[in-house]
Amino acid sequence: MALWGATVHPLAVHYWFNNLERWLGPNPVGASKSVLLRMAFRKVVVDQLMSSPVFLGSFLVYSALGQGKTLEASIDSFKENWFTMVKGGWSCWPLAHMINFAFVPVQWRVLYVNFVQLGFGTFLSMMGNSGGGGVVTPIDSLYQKVTGKDDAFGNVESVALAIGGSWILGGASMAYNWRHVGLTGLGCSLVWGSAAILEISVIMEQDRFWRFQRHGVLPVDKAAALTHGEEVEEEKEVGSSSLQDNSTIEK
Image (cartoon, rainbow, N blue to C red; front, side):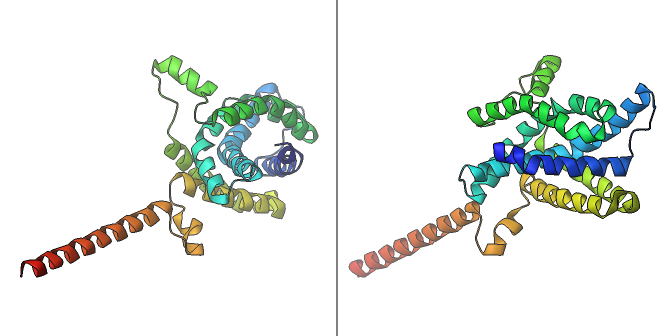
């Protein structure tokens, strides 16, 4: 986690924040608080739908690989923990970024995020200690209090589709405004967009082509099905052979 915080995190956040400023526009000089908050709200919505879920998913895979897990095991860990991680992020970062985008100067925003990240790291530690699935996020707690149900908030497939739709619309907007975004911004969106496609394909269980067929390896369930089928065929052959032997003896 320390290596992630010292390398990937500051670079990714720096380029993404700069891309947001070029794409959605900087805060007007001397604007009122209402204007600043309105502009910040736009950036928060875009950030929490397009960047944060993808960024947290990348962290999960990176963390699992750092623990010595295989790529397949890391992807499985991502699929198990991603939604809880996203809801944990949504419990913290919208409010933090409202302050960030509205009142913190651009050059200090990454430092501000690193400061907030110290608190969010506590949540990451909770996920690591409980295996992810047992963590109840503040969003889940609020949902349970409001509805009186014990169910967790949201549906992972619906959230994945919303993120995918956001990237389609956002990517089209950035391409249309490429003069403002610039080549660096387009490159940033291409990298994040590609990561989003891969992560959504895993969540929606549409990842078998790029995960297995490229290397000629069958998914575990298909391999198990084939193995089971071979066992059934062997049993049939053994049974048929036994019937033939019994018939010969009777003759």
